Every structure is written in structure tokens, then in C-alpha cells.
Image (cartoon, rainbow, N blue to C red; front, side, top):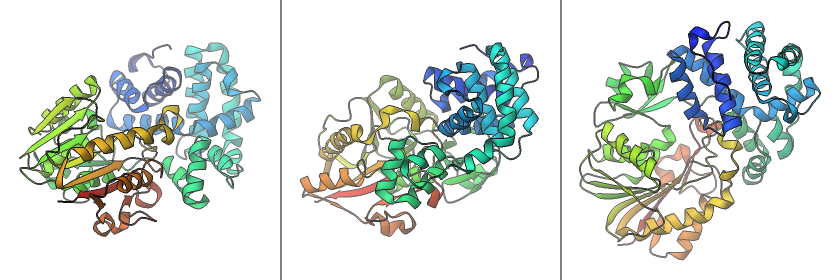
Length: 445
């Protein structure tokens, strides 16, 4: 893939569109993670906060809507998207997204700059890009509006999800909820931050940011903000984290002086939250299997002032001695609750629930073995998938008579599970935050 020049060499192409085009190509041609690709390209192009906000909207929206965009492209180009050169397809996807799904983008800018992007990497395809986008400006919205969504397969195309996700949600929650979930996945994720109470308060942090306070720890951004380029990030004053993710550490509710185990701990949002709730008094053993992620977790804990965190590079399925007062089991999952903030996750084949449930059960068993009698364990995932959530917990409880679920739904009634109210299940379309499942279990004394 050809690199783009720095802003001085961009000519008539806006830096935000150049950045989005590069991110789209890296995601679909190099299997890059969208958030990491965006961070790298934005830093290289030196985008300010406003341009970064536009680049995020364009790149994330294009990646999320890929299936629907390709349908429109194929209708207008009268050929399969698989037969188009990669830079041509990237320019078309970016242009069609703007013309079909955004209201405040001038058509001449979406068409003209997409054509210029194609000219640089595939000059012979620029004419096709121009012709298709001019038609998209007239016909794109009508094509999408006419797509049916009565069945799971139809809804998958209209809302740009793999069919397996649409079928899973149609079967588990019914057609109306499934459609609402998929529609919410294509909207921008709530821009929430957690104030690191080891160093500041939400009120103090709000005075420095374009944000308003939601509770004692959570803030919602009110305008463009480059989180990872901000001094507040370097100073360890904040952590990008959804309100649902914050509920996980609160559900475990550790207190000062306790010994806490955090399995699958990277990247460290929940680990450092636990340390803050404990006032940095006690011990947190944070287990992470991958050495690179473990090292990054150590750096995060240091930046956030979480001195009680002991990062261990180890396999979370290996049992430990029952010496912990509280255990957090946050295993790898299909990420179906975070598809708005992780736009490429829906297209990754590795995330199938069936392939993950067995590993999740192993890690839950290991976490339970490390818990003292009378201790508390929280099992959480950032997914909306019964096979990974309530079924994993049900199978565990059936095999362990010394464990019982406690009523989290009574603590947070607005987020309680629709059919098992002792658990939490947040839904992006209903709760305006990530989709998380949380169960709290107690071991008999």
C-alpha cells in the first residue's frame, strides 16, 4: 500500500479524508485494527482535534458500513466489488459513505477528493470513481432506504453486519431488538472517560476538558478531544472507558487492604479502576498472557499511579492458590457489545462465540480456584451473546454448589438482564453505552 504524504503534500485533499482513506486501506488490506491505524495515521498527519473527529467519523463509519457500501457500489458500478483494485474500492467506499449516510458533507467535496485519492494510487480507476460517486450522490440514499430488514439475512445487509451476528441476535432477542442493536452499532460510541481518582476528581478534570460530569468518576465529552495526545492522558488523569465498563470494577467492589486477582488484565482500564477504588492500598495481581500487552499494562499502571498492581505474564487458565479476597474474570470474548467503538471487530472471523465459550469456562474455573471462601468473583464480558454470558455462568454454578449469584440487578435496575435479573446486561441502543454482561458470584464461607 502506498503511503500518503504529510499535510503539506496533500494538495486539494483535506487531511481528515486522507487519514480516513489510509485507515480504510490498512484495515481491509493489512488486517489492521481501526483504532490503532487511526491513531498512527492521525499522529503522522498531525491532525488537530477537529480534523481527528472528522477522520474518526469517516474511517469508522466506512469500516462499519462496508457491506452496505459494497452493495451500493456494485449496483452503481455494475460489477463485483471484489474485482475492483484496492485503492479504487477504498476511495469508493469512503465517498459513498459520505454521500449516503452523512448530511453535512458537500457532495462536491466527497466526490472530488475521493477521485483525487484514487488518482494518486490507481490513476486508471479515477474515472470509474468519479462516475460511480456522481450516481451515488443522486441514487445512494434511495438504494439503502429500499433495503428490507424483515429477516436476519436482510437486516445484516441493511445494517452492515455479518449474517451470523444478525441470526444470533434475531434468535436470542427477537427481530425488533436485533435491528435496534445493529442500528446502534453504526452510530458513534458515547465518548466517555473515567477520571483517575488517585490523581484527580471528575469535577477537577471537567474544568480542563470539553466534558461534563456524569457521576463521581465518569465524564462525557462535549466536543472534539484528542485523548491520546492530551497532557491529561500523559499525566494519568483519565482513562477512555465506557460507563458499562466502569460498572465491572464497581460490581467487584474491592476495599482497601484486600488481595485482588485480575485475569486477562490488559490493557488495564479495569485494573487501574480497581486500584483507584482501593485507594491504592492492598494488592492487585494482574495476569496477562502476552508479554507485549503485559509490558504495556505495567506502563499504564505506572502512568495512572496504581502502585499496588503486580503484573504477571502468565496463562489465565492456570489455577492459583485460593488466597484472593476478590477475583475479576474478564476473558477474551466476541466483542459484540463494542462494535460502535471497534468498527472492524464485526468483520473478524476469530470472534465467533462458539470458539470462545470453552476458553471462557476454563478461565472462570481458574479464577474460582483462586478465591478464598467467603470471597467475591465477578465474571464480565463486553459482548451480547448468551453462549458466552449467562450459559457460561449457569454451567459453572451447576458444577459448583459452593458458589451462588448475588443480585446485581437490584444495585443497577436500569441495566439488569432482561430474563435473568440477578445479572447485568447493557444494550447500546437502550443504555447509550457498550454492551456488557456482568455476573457477581460469592463463594460460601
